Amino acid sequence: FTGSVPIAKSFRDDSPVAGSYPPGMYVDKLVMPDGYSQSGMNTRELVNLLGQFTEEEGRCLVLRNLKTTQPSMKQVLFPNEKTVTISTGKLGLSFKGRKIARISRIHQDSKMKGLVYIHMIIDTISIPGGSTFSGMTAKEAARILGDTKNVGGRTITLKGPDSNDISIRNITTDDASIGGSSQNMSDAFTTYSEGSGMTSVRM
Image (cartoon, rainbow, N blue to C red; front, side, top):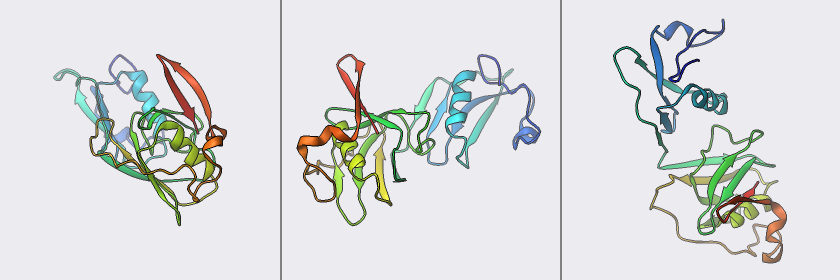
């Protein structure tokens, strides 16, 4: 892709879209199967997005004619709710939020690329055969995920950044489903400052 609006300048021999991309068209929007979408992207932003979602099937590019249409305004739309099964081990995510946890960063080595989105709210974490936690701060969410990193089948339910339909707080720091106690809550994650009084935790 090239230009301020994304226009394909060439295709690889094995490109699945080479035969269905008309000349003179630009990419106006990227839509994911779960309803997430971005529009009004420049070329660099589109390339970065496609890189994040490279393993995801069902991605859709909305094309528009450069000569007859204007690019859409920049906009990001999120799914209202999304539940994802979490792999074991380190997730490669950072969270922030002193009252309610949100995803603040998806790291380059993250196993969750294409499955979760920055800014979404962590509504609940469910542990198989154990408990369901909700209404967590960033540190609490990181602690729960860190203490259960070897447990398969965990799920995390995310809500859109502007959602008002948030589950009520349900967390006990000494719950039997997670190890440790309230005294060692910081052992499972790394904290770092993002300025403006904000602190993030990385899983």
